[in-house]
Image (tube, rainbow, N blue to C red; front, side, top):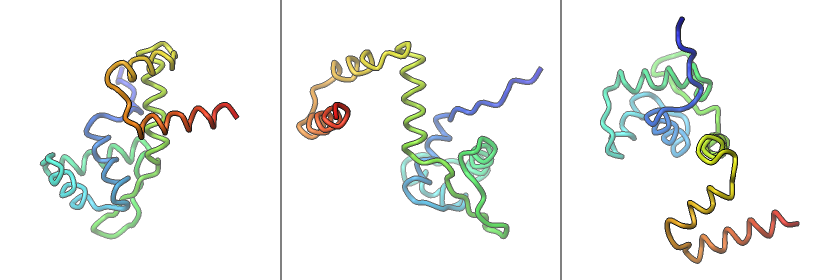
Length: 127
């Protein structure tokens, strides 16, 4: 029996999604160039395969019918990152958000900006 297709993003797929979120609609060549600029030099066929998989998973859609094909993201950074964090909280911390916060806070001291952001979020949540 075949293994079901994963809906989660692999590390490389997430790298490609970051290109879409930063630069918008892209061709495979543009994605490959952006990845190479960031130190990830992949073959054109590898990037094309990653884009095809992202299309199959519903993260990306082909925008045109003529070559070169353009692709765009169907899912926002906020949506994807929110789902990844929710999955992390469930899988690692058994649903305990406070345990996630303890880990984050225990690793390093908050900057003044981070502290102000956190205080603002807490104020908004308590209203």
